[in-house]
Length: 190
Length: 390
Image 1: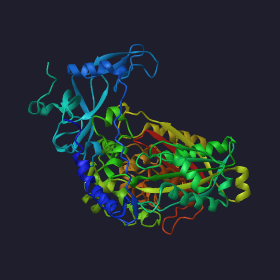
Image 2 (image 1 turned 45 degrees about the vertical axis):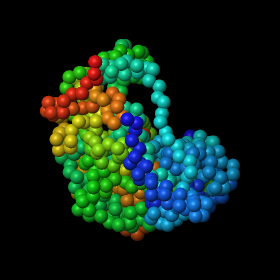
Image 3 (image 1 turned 180 degrees about the vertical axis):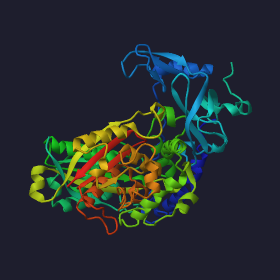
C-alpha cells in the first residue's frame, strides 16, 4: 500500500476548490488569508520530496533487519559503540564490527505525539521512546502501547523487528515486556 | 581581534504576518536598525541572514533581503543553526567585524512560517533532529523531542505539569507588556492545564507558536562605534558548541551538554564566574521554545543547581525583582518564535534592556550592565550563549 496522502489532500481540498473557483472567475489564483483577509497568491507549483539516501555502508544493518535482528557497531580499535550504527569510528577513524542488540532494555524516556507531521497524519497518535540496552547502546523507536498510562519510566522493553503498516516495510519497535504476551512479536516470515 | 558594538536594533511585530513577504518583513526590521544606528544602507559592508526556511518560497533569503533593503555593496550569506540561526548570524557578522573584514555589518533574522500548511511546518521542525534514525521511521516532532526531556526531568526531580505552566504564565504576562509580541493576553495556570496535549506531557500552552517575524542589528567596529555614539552596547563574548545529532547519544535527558559548554566558553571570555553568574548578570533571555527548555536553561546556565531549576519557576524567582529576570520580553513562548529571527530578537531585547529602553513594566534593574542570551537550535543540537554589556 503506498503512502496514504488522503488526509493531506482532504485538508487541502477546500483551498484547492476555492482557488479553482477564483481562477475561473478572475483568472488569478488569489485567496484571502483566513485570519486577516490579506490577499495570498496560491502557488501553482507543488514539490513532493522523497529522498534517495545512500546506505551502502549500512548493508549489514538491513540484512540484519531482514533476519529479525537489530545491529549496532563497535570500533575494532577503541571499542566505542554506535547506535545509530556507523562503519567508521568518529573517535579514532578505524573500522567497526557489526553486533546484535539482544535482551531487555530499560526505558529512559518517552512521549506521545498528538500533533503529527504531514507525512504521519495517517497514523493514530503514537508513543515514541528511548531505551538503553545491556550492550550499552540506546535506541529510539515507537513503543507498542495504547497509551502512556500503560508504560512507566524504567520499564523493561524488548527490541523487535516488525513489518510497519501501512507502508509495509521492516523496521524495529520497542515492546514493554509485561505486554509482550498480549501484543505478540511480529517477526519476518522465513 | 577588535571589539564589536551593537549600535542599531530593529524588530517587527511577531505573529501571523500575511501582510508581508519575507524581504519586506526583514527590511522593516533592517530599516529600523539602520535608522537607530544613524547609518545608511550603503554603509553596510556585510550581511548575515539567520533563516531556516523550507516552509517559505524564497530559497535565497539573503539575496532578496539585501536587495530590498538596498544594501548595494554588502557581501551576504544565509546562516543556518536551526532555532539558533539568529545567534549564529550575529556571531558570523560580529566575527567579520572583529577580524577587520568590515567596519559595518548587519545580522538579520527572518522567517515566514505561515507560507506553508501547519502539518508541513510540524514536519520541517520534526526533521530538524536526526532525519534517518528518528524522523523517517518514528515521526518524532520538535515538541516530541522536548517532551522526552520533560518526561525524564519530571520523573527524576518531581516537577509537575503545573510547575512547567508557571513559565507560560510568566512569559505571557511579560508578552502582554510587549507591543511586538505575538500573544498579548495573560494566561493562568488553569488555562495552560486545560489546553490539549501536543506531545505528552507538553500541552499547547507549554509550546511556543508558529510565527512570522524579523529582527535586525547593526554591528560596528570600535572606531565606528565611537564616532556614532557615546554609549554603545558591546558584544562582550560568544560561546558556541554542538551536540550529537541522535538524542540516543546523549548521556541523559535532563540538560544539554552543548549548552553547558557554550555557557562555559561565554563566561570564560566575558570574565563571569561560572559558579556565581548571577553576581554579574542583570537579566537573561533564554530559549523557551517549550516551558521545560526554560527550566533546563536555568540549570545549564548555572542560575540553579541541577534538579532545582523548576523551583525557580515555582517560587517565581525569574520575574523582575526576583533572583534574576528571565524572558521579560515574553520569551519565545509569548513573543513568538520565527525560527531564524529568535536569536537576533534576543540581541535586540538585550540592547533595549541595557539602554533602559524597555516598555513600561518590563525594564530590568540594570546594575552590572550585563544581559545574556541563550539560544538553542534543535534539541540541544546547536548552542549559542552571547554576553551583551554596556
